[in-house]
Figure 1 (spheres, rainbow, N blue to C red):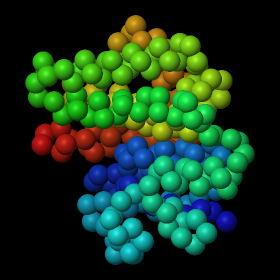
Figure 2 (figure 1 turned 180 degrees about the horizontal axis):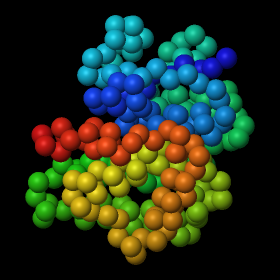
Figure 3 (figure 1 turned 90 degrees about the vertical axis):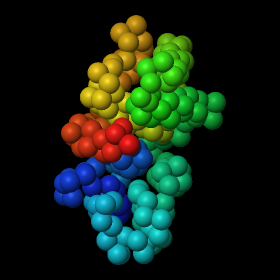
Length: 212
């Protein structure tokens, strides 16, 4: 039986998968573990009543596990790992927080209106730290095999590339070769190609936040 999951629909295109990195993270776990699932696309601008009954805060992703709707991508991924241990995707604890500051640093830089406020530098520092880690431990964060931490970072790095490229004409510096190879490796996976939002939907998702 297929697992049911509610994910964000694209802004302005309610029948197309939207740009939520946390939804994609869960979809990536399902794909990598070959768990059959059925997606419900939720228009977050006009949430259906049945959805608000299962997710009172109106947040996605939510997944139905053992007849209960479960929210929060961290919690969902943990339960999926427990119930479907093969192939194992658990990240060794010492690597679990690698790269965790990249997404908040990216959002600050993306929204920043002042080129001298240090937000670009802060993001570069985080990317350099990831590059250094991958140089020693790569090609993935925990070594040879992909784990949950990579599946969490992949959608965020995709948002970073697309949104900063579009709104700031900014790209990850060429000298961060390990990060660039890592991104190539992640984005070329079948699971990633199947679950990513189209670039124009990522841009549409960030537009209101950038212009706020």
